[in-house]
Image 1: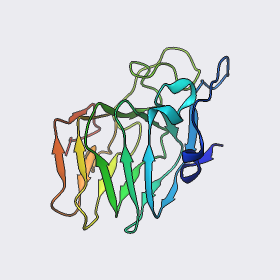
Image 2: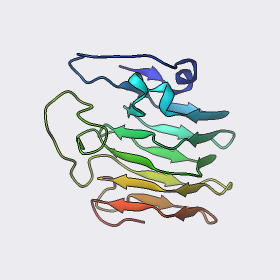
Image 3: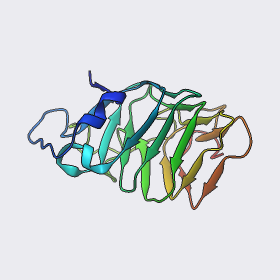
Image 4: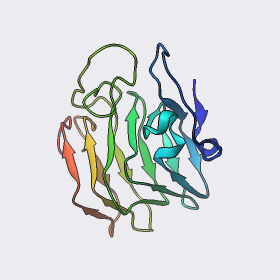
Length: 171
């Protein structure tokens, strides 16, 4: 379960503790068709940690701006597909596996775990509007045939990014 990502903007200054599956806000993917921003203040306890449970599709008419200190953790079936616009103009921003407890703590509530190559699908950039990723660290994503970040169209900017622990290649 989780909250549709488009509804997260109505959340701020909430707390959580002692929850068996972790004290994080779980977001169900879905389609972003308009301007949307993810900020650390929208996460539980101001932690900046969000767990994405499924495909997040940024449609051609949509945009997602991710503010500094946001940590996105992904379940195995989750990925970000960008046909619109993805903007991270200032890091740090982290995108990693739900199993990576080294950043954002134990978000799954399953005790100490580490990420593994290919734990989640990664980020696919295919929009005609150039996306910008500055200061983003992407960990433990990709498949044996796809990199951690895939640019299917030109003009996208990756600046000061770290692509780590991919199943095959980084970009």
